[in-house]
Length: 517
Image (cartoon, rainbow, N blue to C red):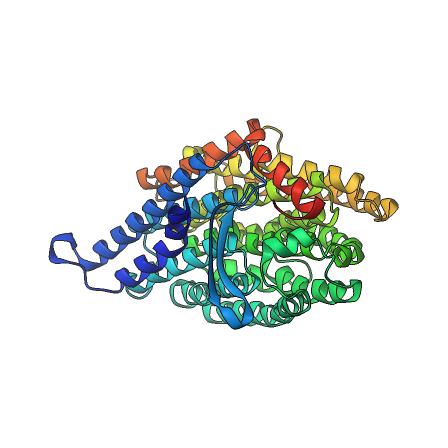
């Protein structure tokens, strides 16, 4: 198990290095480009298989205990250690990351985005996977920061070199926002390490803030929280996200929404809740207020983009929807209750599945129509996907109703539990304030349903295809292969939420009570 987790974290890095080497003659296939794309599918497939084996070998009777741990001294003078491990909180995110990266590599094998050589694309994709997996597996604050930063450069180049219109400006905005947030976060992490005498996240969580004064905790939460909030992204620090999603290639948008945003909320749960509980209690009402503001803002922005005549970009609309959905995650965390935090973790995974599927679908629609502009797509009578590409239309409608939180699908449980947690926040938090946040968040679910159903009506419904118009292709075989796992897991998580909650709940209970055993 120790070797397996180390392989999952380091394997993609080795694969990235191998991708830059010339392919052996017998493995080149029709061309070197095909060989390197096949290499990306192979490496990400091996990592996904290793993650599944790790999940199957995980002791589900003790999900609150760190398992598959490795603890080696790295920088002795600073007591920085190569400390890896997984519990019920990090395991679902590890598997989600491995799955989405494999599906992106598979999709790219058949539909490589326009840009430079595939060698660089595959290498960057694998470095991105390694950094994300490391973020969810490391148990040292310094290593967490390094892994957190490791994903920025590959995502910058994926947007800047393989993106669409406006990609340079979007890539610069992404890197500047996230780097500035990370600088502030580093100061907070160093403050905790210096004052507590250790950077070990397990030891710090077990201490539960007893070795840190309230003032130190407040400063640390403010500094670290800003860096995490930028990555989440929390309103009003979200403005880099719509541009990045709009310009990014399809697989870049899938990974950005599906796994990179989760790094921010994971940091809140793994670091701030157990290590600085007093500081979090001070800022929890403000975090909840920003969260519900993001829910309403994101929904209103989507409604504006979806209205006829506003020239709204469908990719941009899905990006703004992420601001609202991640608002529910932050609201659940702000409650500081097991119910709310479990809801946040569930919503994290559900958002990765559903929004990943949405970006795949929007990318496919853009490839077919040559645009993601809603007014152009809808035209005078509607794009009528139900009649022109019925499978594609059905999948878009499915992803939309899953995103709006239809009971029986994955999007429902996380948002419901987050609202339940806000209805009964942790002791010491203002219940009237959180009741207000609950009401605002519930209203946000109505707005979410409104804009998503409007999108489905405009894109999927309409008159028959005009005579002489070129027909569009329905879902292709490789698209079925890339999208079916996301559809199946969305249904599974919706019908059987205990699969995920059974992992997270014991770990969350232990974390809030004083660290991880």
